[in-house]
Length: 194
Image (spheres, helix red, strand yellow):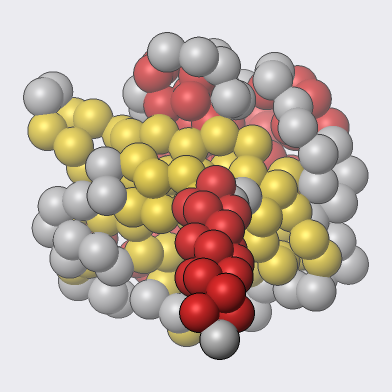
């Protein structure tokens, strides 16, 4: 019986250790090594923190069908993708929506941006409707092939999907484009060592 108990404890410790390796923790936020994006498995490509001056704003994890280390690889990759963002401080979501709109505009040419204006305005409204996000609350931006871009805030899908494939890539360019929100976060999402 004693041997069986020891074996059970050893197995339990092994399972706990295996579980510890299946997550990445960034500023106290845990990102699983893989996730289910609407029925499709995606793996964590990288995770990091968005800083504004010296303040931590949010932790973000990028999930892809397979590893990629350049923005072009990420944007061109087919399959389900997810950007998972968890707040590290309270933020006014109206301001967040404006920052995202500016981030999209700063990372694409004017003609391409003008085609996305209706979607950008709708996305800004989604965030404005929430008033604020508190530390620990999260939102996800998913690309679901055949469905479109799905935005989920605090576990609730926000309206109909955005059908245009270029809309998801425009959103990703906020973090991965030539003028990213945070250069260190860009490197972290691309799995590049700090």
